[in-house]
Length: 564
Image 1 (cartoon, rainbow, N blue to C red):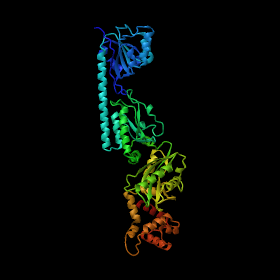
Image 2: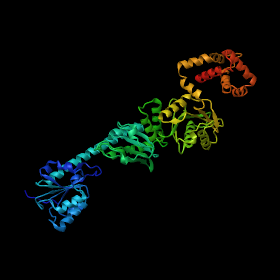
Image 3: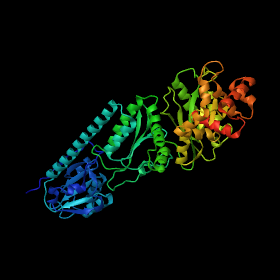
Image 4: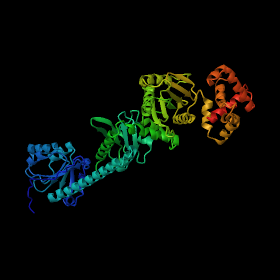
C-alpha cells in the first residue's frame, strides 16, 4: 500500500479548558497498537492531555499548530538531516504539541537524533511506529472520544444548571445550596463572605476541624490544600460577585474530576449565590445563617467534640484558642419610639462597635424568645488581657456600649428606654463559652447591678445566687420550695378587700435588696417609711419569721429568685 502524504487533518475541541484524552490513552488505541509503538523521548510525560489531532506533512503545516495537539506525521517533506532537520524539530517543539507520533519507513528508518533531542528538551513525548497505520482512523477515534466527552460535559453542565435553577425557584437556603454543590463534585465546599468569614460549608463526610482548619485566622490557602487521593484535582475557588459588588468567595477543596469541570460547577454555583444575594439586599441571610447554626449547635449539644465546633466558630470569625470567651444577652427595655427592626439594628451595631477592633462577636436573636424584637444572644471572644473582660462594678464593656449607643440612637428615642446587657462568666475554651451562654440565657432579665448611660447591666460574677437559682428554677422540687416559703404572701397579694394591698412580694424584694438599710429599701419600694415598716411587720406575721435573721433572709432570697 503506497503512502499518500496528507496536507492536514484537524479536529478541534471547543472546550479547551477541559482536557479529555492523554497520550497514554492514545497508545491504547488498536490502530496505534497495530503500528508497534515505541517511546523514543520524554517517557515521564505520557500523561499530557491533548485537545485535538493534527496530521502534519511538510514544514509549512507546523506553523498552523496552536499547542496541545497530537501531531501525527511521516516526516514527509522534512529534511533528512543537518541543520535543516534541527530547525524543523525546534520549530515543532516550540509549538508545544501534546505529543508527536512519527511513522517510520517512509522518510526515516529510525527516529532522528535531532527530533529526539528537541522533544527531550521540551518534555514532549515522541512515539515512533514501526508498522504502517492509517492516520485517518486515529484522528477519527480521537474525534469520537473528544466529542463524547464534550457531550458528556454539556449534559453535566445542563444538569448542574437545572439543579441550581430549581434551588433558586424553591428559595432554598444557602447552606442547602452549598450542600448540593458539595455532593455534586464529591468534595468539601466552603462559602466565605467578603470579610473572609465562613458563611456556610459542607464537608462531604470530612470532619469540620479538617475542612475548616486555618479558615478565619488567615492561615488557610486553598491553593495548597492537600488532596485525599492521588487522582484528586487541586482546590478551586471562584468569586461570588454581581453588578460590580463582591460578596464573597466559593471554594472547593481537592476532589475527583467532574464531567462538567469542577471550576464550571463552582462558577454556576457562584452565579446562583450572587443572584440570591442581590435578592437579599440587606444580606440578612448571609449574615445570620452561620451564626444561627453555630448557636443552635452549642445550645442543643449537637456535636461530638469540642474541637469540631471550635473550628467552625473560628472559621466564622470567633477565635477560641488562647482567647477569653463569654456569653451575653442584649435587649431593649421600654418604648423605643420607632420600628422594632431599627431597635434591633441599633443594638447589634452598637455591640459590634463596642467589641471591635480586637474583640469578636457572633449575634443572633434568641429562638426561644417570641417577642417581636427578641433578646439577642451574643458569643464574645477577646484577647486574654483585654480590659473589657474585667469584672468591675461597672463593666468596661458596658461603658463602651453606652458610648456607641449615644452616637447611634435617634434623637427622638424616649428617655426611659434602656439597653439591658447580661454578661455571663468569662473563661477559656469552648466548654466555658457554652456554660457562660447557657447561664446568662437561662437567667433572663435580672435586677441591674450597674447602669452607665442608657445601659443597665447584670453580671453572672456579681449575681451568683440569682444565676444559680435561674438555672434550677425549672425543677419541681425548687418550685415547691418557693411556693411553701412564699405561699402566705402570694395568697395575701392575690386577695381583694381592705388590708390587702397586693404589694407584699414587691416590698419583700425591696427589703432583701437592702436588708441593712430599711430607709433605702422603702425608697426602692416607693413607700413612706411608716407604711413600709407596717408591710414588713405584716410579712413577719404571715410567714412567722424574723426578717433580721440571716437564715430567714437567705431562704426568702432563694425563694424569690426561684419564683422569678
